[in-house]
Amino acid sequence: MSKLGNLGARLYRGEVGYDFVGKRKIWYGISILITITAIVGLAVRGLNMGIEFEGGAVFNTAKTSVSVAQAERYAEDASGHDAVVQELGSGGLRIQVAGVDTAKSDEIKADLSKNMEIKSTDLVGPSWGEQISKKAWTGLIIFMVLVVIYLAIAFEWRMALAALIALVHDITITVGVYALVGFEVTQGTIIGLLTILGYSLYDTVVVFDSLKEQSKDITKQTRWTYSEIANRSINGTLVRSINTTVVALLPVAGLLFIGGGFLGAGMLNDISLSLFVGLAAGAYSSIFIATPLVADFKETEPQMKALKKRVLAKRAAAAAKGESAESATQDDEEPQDDLPEDAAPAGVVGPRTQPASRGRGRGRPSGKRR
Image (tube, rainbow, N blue to C red; front, top):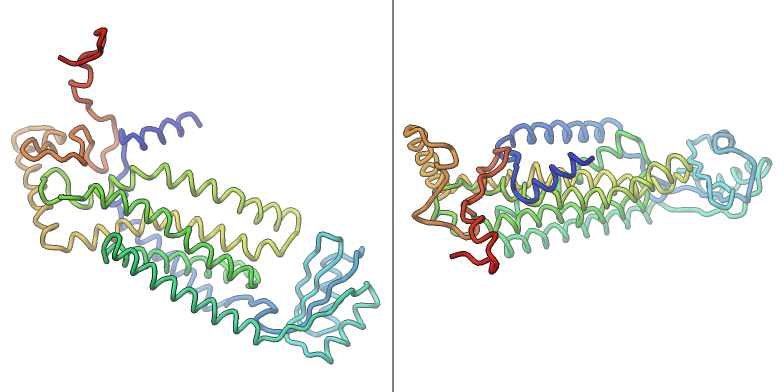
């Protein structure tokens, strides 16, 4: 743990770095593979829609000694349909049977009453779920449009496009996981999906803000290409992204694995799974997808192509003279305030050489340099 903490501190100070952007083809391949798996799972297995979307009857029982498995068997024998049973905190059960009408629900209630006390019966029509779905889709579309407009104004359209692609990537993976694991899709799932939209963009916007600051007047220097500055932005915000994601995932994991799994409160799975997968996918996409995509988009511009050509030519000339890689990245003629001269090249792991001037004046009573 101490080594991990030390590595995180060095990443934060910029003493080490990892070439995320340079290895973007690997991350693209992983994302494509995961996305295809999610789409195939969605197409083959489909979503296990809850009673709110299919319609049916819900029976709530008083405190009972009947187990969940027994209640499922009783409900399925009485209805001829699959039943979903959840244990309530009061000791009772919530039994859901989809695809039944009022007359059939009365028959099921009579059969279930032979083994347990039924406190209430509710009938749910599929039209309610359809309305919720339409409103959710409307909200999702409006959200994406507003996000694209805001990012295009605050940053630029390439960043807005990259953020939109990352957002669609996160939602697709989350929905695909629901199809693969077979969890029931309820109104809690919809709430979870809409909630992760903000989380998915949070880390992305943090990196974009750093990239915007570091890439000011980028064409006036010949130290770094745009991709290398993008990589510096990722490394500079990496620890912050990891910390915020872990802190957000811990309580959600508690709901999912302890509340929904160990304690058997199945209703917590509806919202916690979408939050857990969405948060993890959002952190991944902000580092491995969104920013590398911006670098790809930007380096198609003629100015960025010319900058990359100048940077590589300068480094090749320095290498031919036998100079070090660090010397090749120095630009004494046009120093940049936002790109410190002691910074290590993007993708290079190792300590940076500190300027000799930093030690001047130490040991003197005034502490001032002469």
